[in-house]
Image (cartoon, rainbow, N blue to C red; front, side):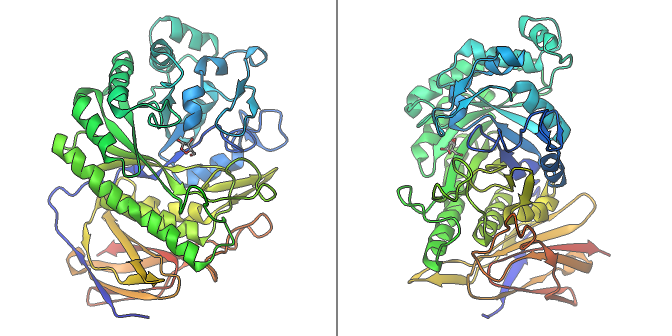
Length: 497
Ligand code: AHR
């Protein structure tokens, strides 16, 4: 164990609200995320609601997922929404060209997805096809989902059994336009964006549609610069950013059997998120000092290599304590940047990449990442309490990273929550915070950790890693002292007098 680290609560007038949408998710037609994941079909023996697994619905409700992005990802720029409505036996197939070349029957479409979102109490975030779809096609999708009155598309919606519009607010205009979305240059994409956005009717949703531009890959700062400079703010509510925790695209390393060297590299890639958000924000500040345009991290998470034998589908990977560290660290980063980051979407909800849920036929398990998101959900829509501290270091092989990320918030019931993630593989770290001005009387807490970094929840041992009661803290004369074990996530709840 090392010396104590002092954390200070700082005062900030008009501290931002931590948008609940930071705790968002992403579900693409990919591997076993939708088909054989969420969606088993109405005739399945697995208990389902309109074909979607009930156990998944319950688990996501518990998580209070605020939004769900769909249908991609790369898939979105190949997807034609009209092929996924109407009589099942008349729907054409679609080949998933980006992911596995599988043929899909389009049985899970717009109605299934939007009704699922209603059931979850989550806002849908539709990713529009800009790469291979037309302007009219996207304009029609908006009319189909949102128009109340009589029109060709709303009439078609009614014919397909849905009277009320769903009122979809969040729309992505293309995905990874610099890559799978069309390999465009930023200069070309901004004109494409402006054209598509022009024909998407704002009229049918309170406050208008919330349009999100396909954003930069990692540190492509020029991309953000060109977008901010050339898209009028009236047409642009959010600019996206994608950053995966991947140590090397050519050799991503194993999902489970990694060593500390690989773990350290993952943490280094994950911690890059702080720098990326800071620098993209600085560019946005140049063009938008009023912070009218939001930064939307609509894809993030760990990405590993999985051999075909072990994999249950394309991009299927296990989820260990390393993933819990990625989740805890990134969510703290997002919270602390709540003035600019208004939404984030973990990739991806079920059976793909850093999933919160894994399924195997009728079985379902919750991953360590699920538990972190569940512990952190207390920050949703709470007011950020900005903190200041110098983190102790986690060192490996001559390099070092901050061992601790921390964020705090106060909700409308005057409950204060502080979340800590200690990524240090070996050392305990002790912190103190003076909470006197908050008048805290009682503290309670929970912790997620395990005996080994490589531990995970399996179908045979689904509860190996679950949050436990945490008691390794003291509160004396308003000074809180907390001892954070190696690779742990701790969330404390502080009650005022
Ligand atoms: O999440 C997997 C893929 O990663 C998405 O389809 C794409 O947008 C990104 O490259």
